[in-house]
Length: 218
Image (cartoon, one colour):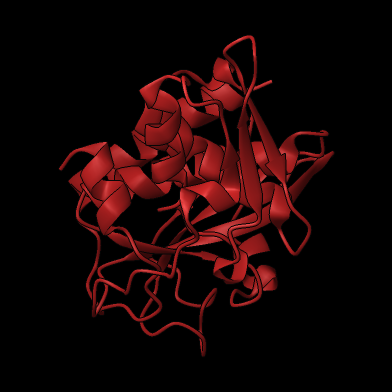
């Protein structure tokens, strides 16, 4: 499965099979988590075989990613970007996932993750083998979330199309991408719950879909 295919096929899943994740899959996810931490400076952690975090909320979910890091100005953006990178990696490994804020017991999570001085827990991403593959969300048109001149390079449109595949809080897609005169991209978050996390998520999709680097953003 390619990253593009994973972005197209990944949908939020809230019901999971009572099925353990094999050790080779856990090892691959841990390697991706370690790579994301090294690149971002975050303290993201993979938790497996822990059934209390989603008890009474998601059926049989016993694995998740805890997005933890220092409380910097770009903390939420980084959590969104690198959290979605791991979620897409999980999809490519045959797992399903769901971004979670209110559906998780943060008390249970904090018993199983390390949160150092100056750090905080942002959100979690539930992981496992879904009882279904989830359903696509309704999507805005590219014109509703982007602005570019007629002669903008094709990679910009590709990035916007990929961003519209991304999960956002309540599926509201409150973000905009603008192609700037110097060939960069201005990405702006809207207003609403977890809007800055959402912006990080859609930035990852934009980068993956466009083939550009994260440095494309101003």
